[in-house]
Amino acid sequence: MSVRSLSKPVVSEVNKDGGTETLALSVLLLGGRQSGRSSVGNALIGGAVFRSGPGFGGVSVTSRPQRVSRTFPRYFRRNGAESHLSLRVIDTPPAKPRPQEVRAFCPDGVHAIVMVVRADLIGEETQLEREAESLFGPDWFKHSLLVLTHVDDLKEAGLQPSLFLAQAPDWLRALADRAAGGVLFVDSGSDWPSLTGEPIRERVLSLSARNHHQTLAVIGLDVKDGARLS
Image (cartoon, rainbow, N blue to C red; front, side):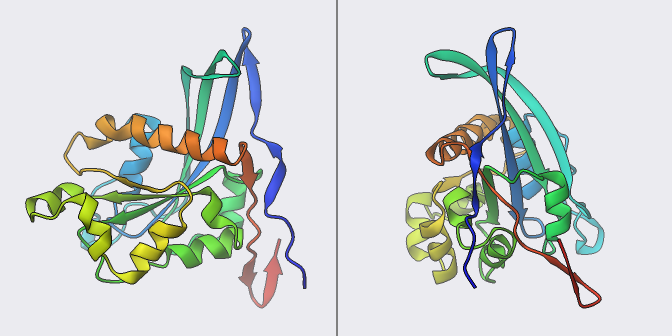
């Protein structure tokens, strides 16, 4: 059976507001429990909108997908003119996201997949690559960015981020190599979302531009009672 094209041929939504274009990008967050995934979402949006922090009894505070949108006026220049940037950020539970739920929040696909891994807890392999491929197919890596959180804990242990990946487990090095958006290291101080939001947004914008602002369609199907749901 042939594999259909995963990147949609249409570019992201562009609207004009008083002559100024608005580029709308959809960003999906993937990450395990206590990885800092929701905090990365807060950094992208620029406010404490996603619930984050330790859950009771080890249970994640994120139990279902959430979507938050924000427009950043005159955020960048495009074709020689100032443009607004509108971000639609979808946070997912640490358990494997259901394709039907993800599709409901981003029916036109996503421009970027932000994979979040806690740098000081990498002993156990994550399932992020499998989750991404089950949702988007083999082209997931072209739209992916890897964010490593709690890097300040590494510094306290005397390990510099520049050397971290060289000593990281094979699965993490492979994930870093495949993510087309590269790797971004962030600290985990109490105010880090407000301090690191712009670098993450810039990386997402650059990654989307690299893909000509095309979206990646959700192609995975839910299975319920033996029947596939489209």
